[in-house]
Each structure stands twice: as structure tokens, then as C-alpha cells.
Image: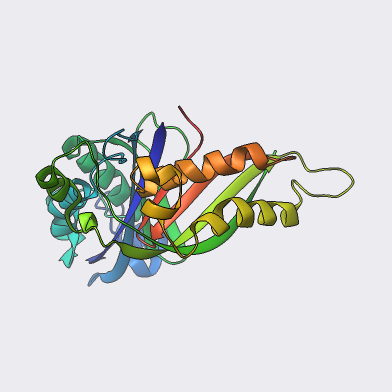
Length: 140
Length: 136
């Protein structure tokens, strides 16, 4: 039997939305308050969904401890209490929550092998969230 | 097609232990969840059914009937119970969140009349949930 398991994590980080490909004016117009040169922060909530057959012996899709350790090592320790603009992958790419969501999906796809990664959902605030299911993924 | 979701809550205790594993393996794989005295959770159950909206009633499903089926088939069996000892499915299967979602599906599916069961979601905590769509 195939089941989908979702785990929720919290991290806090700051960012500034600014594209080097736009003029100062275009940046202000596009990103509004998010273009403030000193940046600002969010408490992000990350949901990671993995799927697989429920193991007949353990009753699990995968061991949660493995998932927690992977997310802690590869994602939370990388972004929690950091300024996202100073992290290598956002040196050029704008750290919008869309781009962060895609980045986290790709990191976990590379590093978590114990179950199939279905979806990454990222809440920037209680009012907005973003989901990514991979380049050829089905809609969430 | 319209999808309707009904929520319910139940509280239960469980522990994780497989007779097919050695005591050492059980402790290694399940950690604190292997404590034989069990521990508890407040589970939240979300049952999603789907169907066409009935032209006369405007309903996908009679909500009262769905509520009664959930109450009778799931909550009465699992609420305030020690899942390993009191729920028949878990005498032989470990009551992981995955297996609880499957058991809820198997209990509800034959009892629903109008609407088709689409998804069973079981939250063990606000930070962990499992979805089951009846897939083999």
C-alpha cells in the first residue's frame, strides 16, 4: 500500500529581493517593501512530503529519524538564522520563496534516498505559501 | 466533481514493536516509540469524499451520515484506546500513522453510500501527517 507522509519544520531567515538585472527603479517597482536594502525576515514553515510503500515489518514509509536528520543537516542548518542573500545559491538568484522552495526540493532530491520526494511546500507567512513538485511533477 | 472534507479528533496511545525484529532492532529502529508502556497523541483525522453535487439536495454527501459513519467505525473504536491492544487491526500490525490511515480507509470505504472516498489524512501531531488514497 502506498502512503504519503508529510513532516513540518520551522526556520527563520532574512532576505532582500533585488535583481541585478533590473534598474534600481524597476527593483523598487517589482519588489516594493521587499527591496529595502537592509532586508527583512520571516518565520518560514517547511512541509516535506515523501511517498512509498508502507513497509510490512516497520509499518513505515520511511524512518522519520532519517528524514529529520537529512532535513536538519541539508536544509535547516543551512538556512536557519541566516541572511539568505549571503548563501551561495542566492548570490545571483533572487531569494524569493519560489526560488527557495525549488532549491530545497532539489537539495532533498539529491540527498534523501529512503523514500520518493513528492512535494516541498513553503509558507513565508500565514498568508502565502508556495509548492514545488519537481520539473515534471504532477500538480500538488 | 466536488470534494468535501470532514474533520474529527481522537486521542489514543500506542507503541511501535515488531515481533519480526529482535529487541535490539526494535529499539534501534523505533527509538522512544518502542517503550512497551506506550505513549499518546491527539490525532486529527480528515476524511475527504468526492462526488457530483445532487441537483435536488445540493449535497455531495449527507454530512450527518458521514459524521455518523466516522463516529461509529473509527472514533468509537480508536478514541481513548490503547491501539496495540484494543483495535483488531493493530494486534498484528504496528499502529504507525501510515497504518492508521490505511485502517481508517478500510473501515470507512465499505460503509459510505453516496460519496466516493478520496483521501484519508491522519495528523499524529501538527508537524506530521500521512495521506492515503487507497493506492495498492
